[in-house]
Length: 154
Length: 302
Image (tube, rainbow over all chains, first blue to last red; front, side):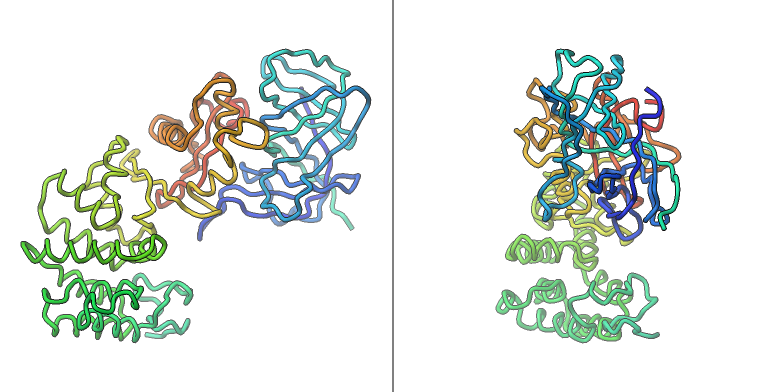
């Protein structure tokens, strides 16, 4: 499953684990083309302040996801509704159509309308989600694995 | 010899941070607290919540007033390093050493947990306590007991946890002036490649509290919103449902995992065929964070 990605604008970067001398991982707030904003976990420290305001292509993995089958078509990214919470990149939910399944790695490519994300399923023992079916995935974290700058806004 | 941050300590002297907020007491007040502690002793201890008063109080009846006054002069002049050398020189040996350690430990235990944590993290307290234990020349078992007494159970917590460290390793760590640590909140200690690595209760941004808040939240909630360790490594079983088993995994990763040579302090250990644990250790040996991840996303071969 090559090039599973979604486009977004980098709007904020917030350190997660840090001390006086260094930041070890961070949360990056991304705004998708439908204006939905979510925070994602950047433990590889792929983003930096120079990317703020820029449009990027990112590979996101929905880590340890609970999955449910949807009865009809739905494309949606639902951010965690608690605006007062600490960023943990959790409690966001993604609905969309399965475009591919990588069985050896038990990974799913999911088209959520604004692009594609990778889904790492949690507690899924029966693989009755063929490509084309619509699912809702709620991950423990959204991990950032790759980022490419596309263009500068403004 | 300039005190640019106006905290009473000379900027540029060893151990002097530029952030004035790191000192609760000005140099003049600290010296006064030392002498007051020596003079008033335990009588007024509850109103003096600081390491200088505790040192003075613990040395009361053991050291000479003139020696205390000399240490106080260095403190009042903002010369933290000389003050520390002077105070360490006052640590008694023999029977007086035992008396000092008893008073020092009991004085610490009399404070609230948070206040004791702050005092135990002060370099003055750490160096005097470590110096006293070393001077006592006791056996491993007795050193563990003294670490317990002077740092609220530290010896039992970290030496007897079976992570491969001795009481002397812990004394080296606690007495290391270059390391910022809180002994009463230190949970586990181990060594890898001669580097001492430790886990502290920590804060929201690093240490066990950070790991819990960001990657566990609730031990029994094996779901997308809860315990990521249990969900990643044993979703249908019973492992990784408590602090001890998750901390064991973190320490297994440090001891047996693979370090990323491009990112020193980043350790990875494969736990299942598909999932690995990542542990990040700061340059000083403090465990910053740990969390599960996909094996195929680990940046190095494991």
